[in-house]
Length: 230
Image (cartoon, rainbow, N blue to C red):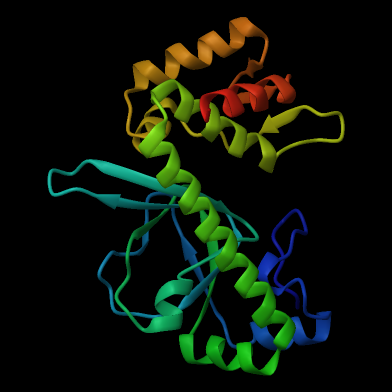
């Protein structure tokens, strides 16, 4: 049976394979269930598995010696994580926490490395995934080095919006982090997040729909980010 979540969305990394090959690949995985708040991966762990998210959402994060959380990214059904240790056999570089009840399929690293040799199309798709990761990290380094707090908020909101852009041009952000989570991710206070989002609402760029945000004016948000970046 192909690995899909309740909405039928497949694992993005494996989408380049035909159904028969994908089914064969997934036979090597062990399916695991996690409750909200469970720690799936711990920093400095020495396991080297690759993880596919079948259902649910997880957060990749680090903690300082004083317990301050630094959040990197939230991942959802269809995504994968753990690829760095699966490649180089090194220790885990971050923690991964279940944000919701989640179903995860776990693949041993030696199986994954073998599959990269057997399926060239999978290898290429994986290289593209790693390239996207490097580009994303480069963008963040640039933003931390050159942008103020409000400008970093604009850039992060644009990233989230592009993930949920509909055909009508409105981005309905389905997985909007809380103000505290955004503050952790962008190294600023919840108050700063709240003030800037309210400012964007007053400008007509975004609207708040209960716990969801909608970006009504993507061109204006893009202009703000381009202006922020000089």
